[in-house]
Image 1 (cartoon, rainbow, N blue to C red):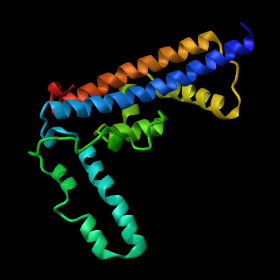
Image 2 (cartoon, rainbow, N blue to C red):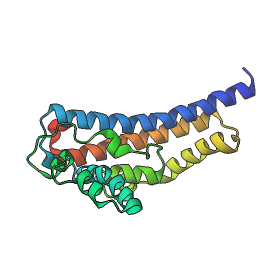
Image 3 (tube, one colour):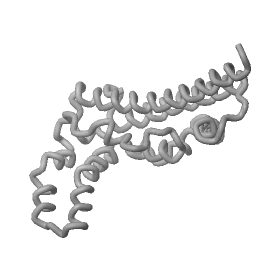
Length: 198
C-alpha cells in the first residue's frame, strides 16, 4: 500500500467519524420523539424549548411574508388561533408527532461547537459544551475543535499528513465526547420527562 493510499484511508476515517457524530444526534432525537409518541407522553413532559421552537417554525415564514407584502388577511389566516400547531401550548395534550427531529436539527446538523450548543439548547440544555467540560472534568471543546479543523482542512484546503496515531487519538476523543454527551442528555431528559422516555 502506498503512502498516498494510506493518507486517503486516514482522511476517509475522519469524514466517517464526522458523519457518525451527526448520526448520533440524528438518532438521539429520532428515538426520543419516538419514545414520547409510543409512551403516551403529555406535552408538559416534552422540553419547553422544543415546543417553543415548533411554534417559531410554524409562524416565522408567515411573518416574513407579511413583512414583505403587508397582507394582514393572509397572515391572520395562517397564524389563526385555531391552527393545530398551537396545541403544543396545552400541557395536558398528548404528544402525537407535533414535534419532529427536523424541528430540532433543522440546518444545524454539522457538529460544530456552535451547532451543538444550538441543538441541545433546543431541548433545554443551556450550554452543552460547558456541561461536557464539567461532567468530564476536563476540556472536551479543544479536542472537538481540533478534529473539526482537521476535517475542514481535508475538505477545503488540502489535507495535512495524517498518521494512524492521529486517527486513534481523534476516535478516542470523539468517543469520549459522545459518551459524556449521552449521559448529559439522559440526565436532562429523565429530569424533565421521566426515565420511561429514554
